[in-house]
Amino acid sequence: MRSVQGGSDRGFKLLLTSLDENVIPTEDEVRKAVIELKKGNPASGVAKVHSFLLDANPSWTVSEKRVRKILQSEGLVRSDAGTPNSTINTIHPSFRLNQSLDVNKWTSRVEVKYFDAIKGKGLVAKENIVKGDVLWKEDPFILAPEWEIYDLQHASEACSLCSSIIRDHSPLHISCEASTTATPCTARYCNRLCRLQAEKVHPLLCSARNPASVPLLAFTRDAQWMALHALAQCTSRLLLASQQDAATFDLDWDVVQGLAELGMEERAQCLREQGLEPDRQNWRRAFELYLQAFKEPRTPGEQKKLARVLKKPIPEELQKFTFEYQAFLRGLGRMSLNLEAHGGLYRLHSHLNHGCTPNVSVRHLDQRTALSRITVIAKEDFEIGQELLITYTNPQSSLRDRRRRLSEWGFGPCRCERCVTEEKVWKESDSNTQEADDLADQLKAGLGVL
Ligand SMILES: [Zn+2]
Ligand SMILES: [Zn+2]
Ligand SMILES: [Zn+2]
Image 1 (cartoon, rainbow, N blue to C red):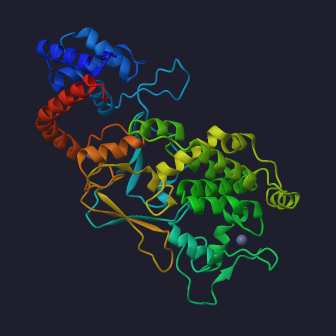
Image 2 (cartoon, protein in one colour; image 1 turned 90 degrees about the horizontal axis):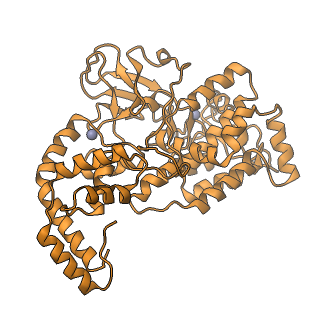
Image 3 (cartoon, protein in one colour; image 1 turned 30 degrees about the horizontal axis):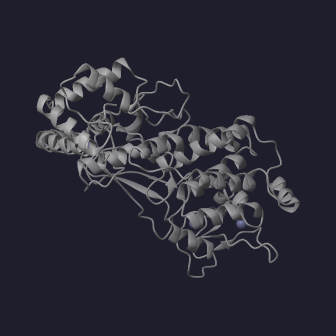
C-alpha cells in the first residue's frame, strides 16, 4: 500500500505535491483496471490489488477504500476462510438439487429450475398464472417460531407443532404423552394429527424424553438465536428419521442436503467487510450444549434417556454432518439462509430466489387451524418460464442498503431490472460524490488519520 510515512506535516506536504501531479481517474476507468488486475491475480486481496493498480498507473490517485468498494460490488472479495493458498474469488452460497423433491405434492403450476453454479436453483411458472392465484400451500419441515409464539408453546398456549393458538380449552387438545409429574413436558397440540406429526421432531426436544435438550433450548431462547433453534429442530428430525426405515431417512436427508448453504465463517468474512466480528465464543458454547443434547448428555440418567430414544446406531454420514464443529457452523448458516421470515423451513419455499420487486407473496392465512402453514400467492401475471421471486431485503430500502444486506449472505450484486436501472442513475450521480469521497480519504491519509 502506498501510504505517507512520518509526521503529519510531512505527510501533508507530500500529499499536496502528489495532488498537483496526479489525476483522479473516472469510476469506469478504475473499475475496468481493478477487474483486469483481479482476474490476473485471483488470490490477491484488496490491499494487493490496490498496490498493483497504483504500480500500473503511477499518475492515479485512488484510495484503497475505492478499490474495496469496486471489488465488493463486483462480488470479487477474496476469501481467507480456506487454506493460505486458497484462490476463491467469490464467496457465495453453495447449491445442490434435491432430486427426490416431488413438487407435484404441492402444485402442478411451478417447477424447479437449475440456473447456474452462482445463481443456483429457483422456481419458475410451468403455465400461465394470473395475479391473485394461490400457487400452493405448504407446511414446514421444521419450525423455529418467533419468540412470542415460542413462549406461548412453552406455556401450552400454542400448538407445539403448528403453532396455532390454543388458549381456549377444547377437548381436542392433547398434551405430550411422555409428560409426568416428575418429568413434565409442556408440549400441547391442537389435535391428534398435530401430535402424531410432532413425533418426527419432538422426542429429542421433549423435556421428559430427552431432558439433556433443556439447556440447549434455554440458551437459544436467551440468545434469541433462531437459527440455532432451527438447527436443533432439524438435527432432531434427522436423528429420529435415522431410527426409521431407510426410505424415511433418505427423504429427510435429501431435503436438508438440498438447502443452499453459506457457512458461518464465510458469513463472518462477508460481515467483516462491514466491520463486524464474529462471536466465536458463543458459537463454541452453543456447540457444547448441542452435543450435550444430542450426543453426550452430562449425567448417566440423561444418557439413559437419550439412548431410549436413539436405539439404533446413527449412520456415519449423519454423525459427520451433525456432530463435527465445522459441520455445525455450516448447519447454522444453512438455517439462517433458508428460514422463512416467521421461522419455518419449507421444502418448496426454500427454493425461491431474491428479487428487489418480489412477484409472489408468502402469507400465513390459516391462522386458527395451522398458523405455520404458508400460502404462496401470485402478485402479478406470469408467463411460462418466468421466475417466482420473494425479497430477502426490505424492498423499500435503497440500492446501497439492499446490496449490503445481500452481501452479508454472500450474494453478489442483484441484477434484477430495478437494480440495473437504479445502478445507472446512481453511477451517474455518484461519480462526483466518489471523487469528493476519494479526495477526503487522501487528505485524511495524508494527515495520518486513517
Ligand atoms: Zn397444531
Ligand atoms: Zn414432550
Ligand atoms: Zn435487485
